[in-house]
Amino acid sequence: MGYHTIHEVFSRFRKAEPEPLGELDHFNAFTLVVAVALSAQATDVGVNKATRTLFKVADTPEKMLELGEDGLTDHIKTIGLFRQKAKNVIRLSRILVEEYGGEVPSSRAALQSLPGVGRKTANVVLNMWFKQPAQAVDTHIFRVGNRSGIAVGKDVDAVERAIEDNVPAEFQQHAHHWLILHGRYICVARKPKCGACLIRDLCQYEDKTQ
Image (spheres, rainbow, N blue to C red):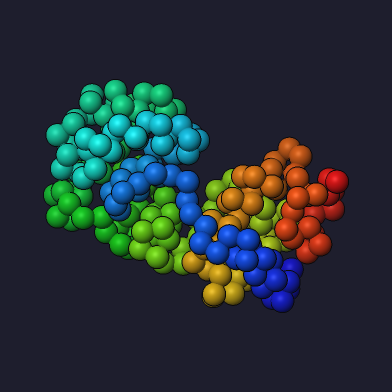
């Protein structure tokens, strides 16, 4: 897909949703890190349900350490892999207090050094909180990028680079949110809703539905 086509794709996304928002509830950088770490192999709805009460009592790393692993486990036991996630959140909270003065660092390398925080999680935090044009590629973006021709790659790292390389700078800040929302609600995995698609005429997918 060429530059002018990709520009048109994102122009349409921007016109439809000028300020797309992530769907994970958070109040500060720390609660965003925790929410994203908890969201691995879980739905945003499920995570939000668990963090609604959690963040009322533990919205800083200091308060999370006071809550402790058992207290945290009680809040998140409805989420998949909750035991390992509880361990990671307590460990990353301790590191934030001991090494970063209780503040969430704003570099990818520092974020990725935290337990349970991979490149995708780091990119979400950099993008959503620190307003860096970082691209967090999940299954939705991987599918939409390859299916449409917007960002083709054999793995998530390749798709991330394709977005960074091919999407015009003016769209980089919100690109991953537009693509996630498009994949979550329109370009779904089993039977994409091509009839309701904003970019149907630009998309390279050959097996379009009605």
